[in-house]
Image 1 (cartoon, rainbow, N blue to C red):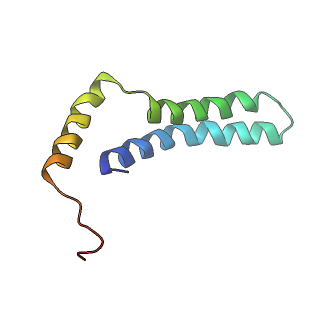
Image 2 (cartoon, rainbow, N blue to C red; image 1 turned 120 degrees about the vertical axis):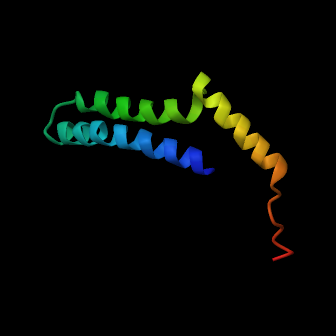
Length: 78
């Protein structure tokens, strides 16, 4: 996982965590509507991972350019 991917995932988790926590608390209280909040939290994370937005295109281009310029060190050469 690249740095920008990790940062965007952390932001998504920061938004999804309160909804997931509320969903768990609601389920533990005996109300089945907690599943809605757990689904909402899962949807936030899935959306961030699998949907490419127009604002993500420059980031993807920068990552490809970096991959083309910088070579990963081989494990044998270390």
